[in-house]
Length: 284
Image (cartoon, rainbow, N blue to C red; front, side):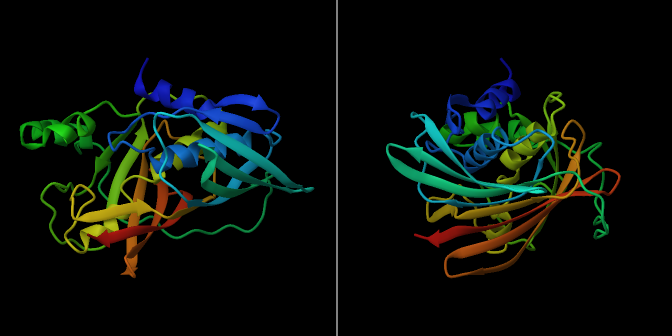
């Protein structure tokens, strides 16, 4: 089974009761659950309690505790509102009897209204750029053994950085990063699936943008890093079978925390989703 199909299985979840789901984890190499996985699974749980014609337009979540990759995660969905146009869900992710994540998500029927968007920032296209996996494989002999298998492994999302950097030898860089991303294989057509996979991908390459300003990386032992919260807005239909540009910036770091913002554009320049996150950046 491919890594992407494995991810789709994880996002599908096992339904235990009408509003209760169970999810499994895949160890990304850190020994703890990847935040994007919990984000995608929580959105999936919420979406499965909502009529299919209502599409997620926003989510806001808080990471409360590290997740155990060796134990299942229970997703308890609270159906707090079903209105004429909007549906609201609250999701709590539970492990070992304690909440590790909570999220509020809002869904809406398809409506027409005013439209505008910011212009897509300039960026070279994905053609000709090397994927992060290709770049890592080139220097595999220089990567410490505990990290080597993780950074060279097959990935469900192919990522091509516009300006590659070496996280093992970080240098100070401007608080801005661009990467192209797409699913490694074709996804099912349902829009909620594309949204869940994009939520999964959105937690990557994010906090590192705030760290780069200070010449540090999450691979360093003298830095404690973790996602604290995550917000996401879905503006227009998403197609992760094709390339999306993830344009990320960090306006501020302070109080051992870094703030990052991101926008996803398709190749035609359409803004399809926006993200924001604050993460822990604590020097040890």
